[in-house]
Amino acid sequence: MAWVRRAGFLVAVFVVALGLGGAAAGAKKKHKKKGTAWASHVTLGHPAANQFTGAVGSKLDACRSSRVVTLFYTDPNTGMTSPLSVQRSDGKAKYQVVLPKDAFAGTYQAQVAKRKIRARKAPQTCRAAVSPVIAVQ
Image 1: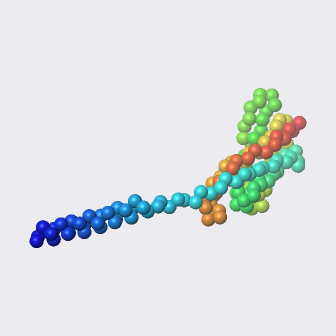
Image 2 (image 1 turned 180 degrees about the vertical axis):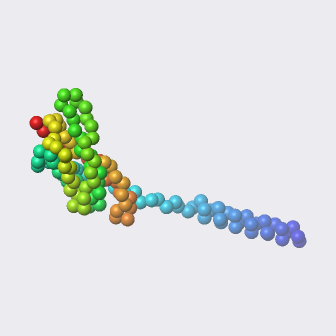
Image 3 (image 1 turned 90 degrees about the vertical axis):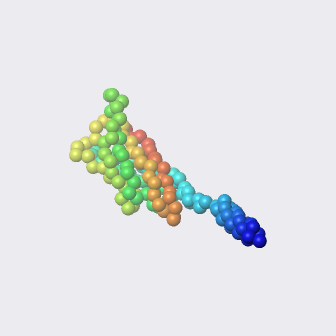
């Protein structure tokens, strides 16, 4: 009779083990919400001899403000490109670069860096953008 009790106990342990293993195997992993990649665009203007202005645009409002904008200068003689200024766009998505003296002759271009943010209760990616080239004589 002891062997029946022992066999019954082993069967009960076996059933419990299968139940726990089946529940763990059937449990689904939670997937993180993957955000969207939002397109951006940047403008560049030259309203004064020592000033550059522009704006950052995107369909997602959070992708417009506090974006890092780099102004690049390309020397027409050597063809070398170098960063001239790094600014952040303000709350209205505008940025401004004021040079200590008049801009040199050459081409200028603004670039906005890629940025990962959290908006709409999920991580979002604001894509990088490049403005059209402006030639200064």
